Image (cartoon, rainbow, N blue to C red):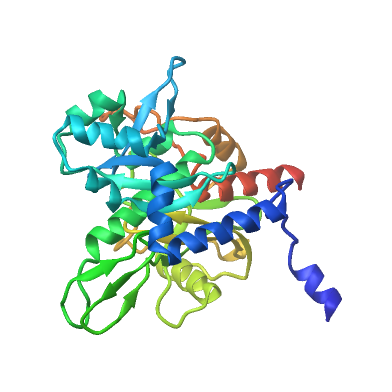
Amino acid sequence: MRCLVRSAFKTRQLFGSRDCSSYVSRMRYLMRLKEDDEACLRALQSGSVLLYHKLAPLLRQTERGMYQLPALQATDVKGILGKLGKDEQLLNSSVLIGCSDDNVPQFSLDVGSLEQAAVEELCGGVFIDLRKAFFLLKGPEAPLVSKGQALLRWHQTHGFCSTTGQPTQRNQAGSQRVCLANGATYYPQMAPVVIVLVSDGRRCLLARQSGFPRGMYSALAGFCDIGETVEETLRREVAEEVGLEVESLQYSGSQHWPFPQSSFMVACHATVSPDNGEINLNGAELEDARWFSLDEIEEALQRKTPPRNPRGEPSVFWVPPSYAIANKLIQEWANQQKKS
């Protein structure tokens, strides 16, 4: 049995060369901030703060034309609030989102009640829609800004108890809300979604919804129903959306996705028989679905930014950008095809 387990699952190195003791200390520190309101409030005074305006993150352009997240200090935010004639106590509504490798606590704050242009001028940046910001940010900044927005959105939409209808009160870290009427505790949640790249051995299947940007195709995806396993969801979604029956599947990875309202993406590869690969499209959810060759996929992966695709002209095929786990699935499939 021990040998079977080893062969069935790949061993993943979670932290690379990171010192595990440093990681553990950071996680214990974050846990303490979530449990101790006074400690979290003190940490906020020395932490870094990401600003949002109506859930759009603040970005700042560098001299090289790149964009980055300006991590402001608490004193910077207080100064901005003071110049705009606002109460400094607004800073205390920040939510805890993490801790840097240098043990600096990280927070996010929505200043949607302030005039957008005035805040942008004082910060030397611009508030950009999160979908667009993903194309501009590099490395670990994209998931950080995604988490910050997701937590802010959750608090904005969970201000009342679903049982009593009474207001809920958050802790200082923003890691939970409690109904003072019945004591019910609510925690931020993600909706589980399975995203799957289907292959018949030499081609991969991609699809598009009507709301996608012109020319963009992606892997199939669907929410898990109550009581379903990941495997059951994957098989059902493929059957429902394109009329194919999955023969085998393999887990690839996972990703938090802030749209539409915080999803937990479980990414898998799946295979179908090449003898039964005729697509029977369910038009209720998908606009189109088709098989793509390796050459088509490699050409699409070379496009690092969305093509212009002017209306009236044939659209150029492209795939989700590198920050999306759909891109990872497509890249993995292409790499595997080149090896075989």
